Image 1 (tube, rainbow, N blue to C red):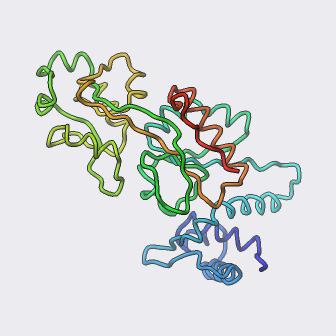
Image 2 (image 1 turned 90 degrees about the vertical axis):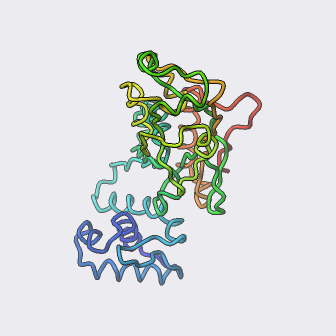
Image 3 (image 1 turned 180 degrees about the vertical axis):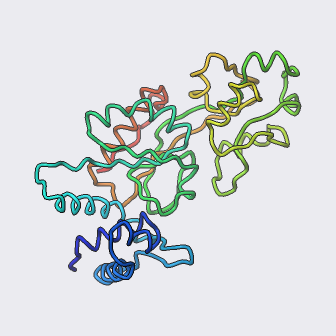
Length: 303
């Protein structure tokens, strides 16, 4: 089987652009050339890389599995095209993670990866892997362990979720001494999203008021609303504990012990870049105080 590196680059560009028009504009060729190149690559590989839809070109499972390798080939082609043998192409690390974990755990601890590892770090916030189907990544962090045979997963960290509000809010609103009292208050939490299937949502939702009066798919919205005295936010303790103004509400009655899982595409288990990203995640989790309890096997590095 003979594969043209330039065809692989076209595949990478189209996978990111998702339409022939955008891909052709980025490469600087006619859209028929892009289509012809993709057809030639699919013929050489003997697999379908894209499914054509009314809205664009969508990666097939085979295409998803090959996209990380295509990204590296594309970077190599660009480096050779620039004609500078000395220039080093920085590694790109793509991490999918929930917004709270990305902001509170990864962002403050990514300096070493950027300066010492000389990596280009792409942190993409996602609610779940299902919500980012077709997106290439090196490592993903999720709250529900996936069952797909195309990925490998291992427990990465544990955390706790509770109710938090400012002292000022609690002083000026009805007293809260039992779960039923929450009905009189504004609760800030996630919108009901059956696609995400969050285990913490399923566990805590029956305890909370019938109507969640401030709903957002972004945890930082809940955090800022609580700090502004809008209401009571449901959030991880590792985020709430950053703010002395926030206090825990009904800690014994409303609590959830959650887990973060690290997910690795099965096709990349032997890649050195995957090992590097995994080590970065483990260091960040340990520094944030979310490391697994003693005696719990840590997330295994791919062999």
